[in-house]
Length: 132
Image 1 (tube, one colour):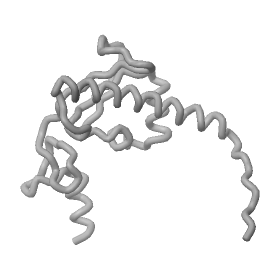
Image 2 (cartoon, rainbow, N blue to C red):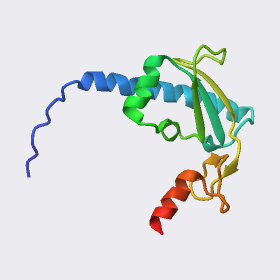
Image 3 (spheres, rainbow, N blue to C red):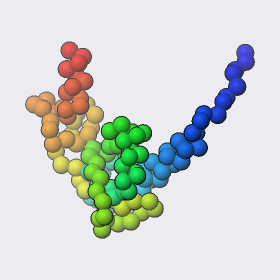
C-alpha cells in the first residue's frame, strides 16, 4: 500500500500562527478557570461565564476560525468579549470568570438562562425538535 505525498498548503504558516494564537487564549482561560476553581467560584468549566479582553484582531480570528463557536472552543457556558478592562492579565489576554447564571441543561450540561419547560437549553431544544 502506498500513500500520496503530502503537499504543503498555501498559507499553512499563517494558519498555524492563527491557531497558535487561539490556543494561547484558551490556555489563558484555562489558567483563569483553574484559579477560580481553587477559590471555589466555579466547579467544572461549564459552570463558568467568561469575560475575555482581547484585541480586535483576536475577535476577527474568533469569527474567521470558530464561526460563533467560541464558548464551545473554551468549553464554558457563556462567553463575552470586552475591551480595555482591568481584569487580571494572563499571557495574551485579560480574563474574568464568574459563575454562569441559569439552569443546567440535562442534555449538554451547559448553564443557560433560557431553559424550556423540560430544562433544555435552546440549542438542545432545537436539536430535539429536529429529531421528532
